[in-house]
Image 1: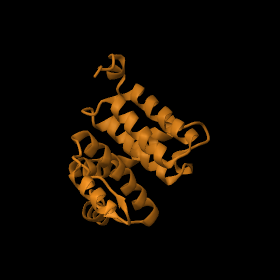
Image 2 (image 1 turned 180 degrees about the horizontal axis):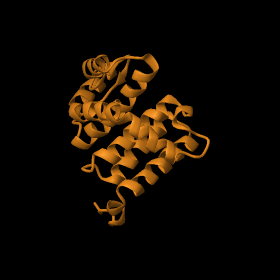
Image 3 (image 1 turned 180 degrees about the vertical axis):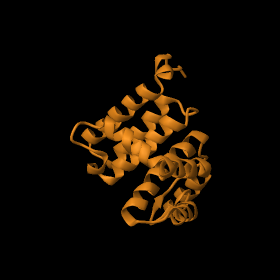
Image 4 (image 1 turned 60 degrees about the horizontal axis):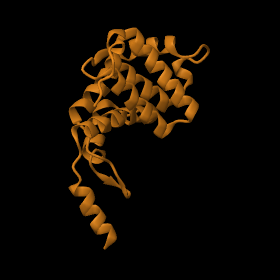
Length: 171
């Protein structure tokens, strides 16, 4: 009885636009990770995530609804700009730690975060950094999360300094 009522509550829960965007960012990181680790193609990953993961329950875990358009934009954008993104992230990582030496999940977080900071000016800098630091904290140790934060912060200062100079909106 309890599990049925819990499922009813879960299915009636409304997911806000912001939550759907956060979930799309998480799904993009997971999709890129899966593409690298399992050598899956773009169409296969899109089909899998959109049909079986986003907004579904799998083995007792509830995967929240995500904004499909943003998910696709992030994954396709990272793939299209990956060489330039990797070059930029390599410059920002600590000496002796090229991107190819960090864990695959951290590479995925850094790539999607960098893509959004560089190519999606409609996403506020502080939101982008916060979102990807939150994603990193779900998968990585504290020091690695700090490295993600530092790299994205440095990238934001290089690419969107004017926005960072403005006071944060209170709200």
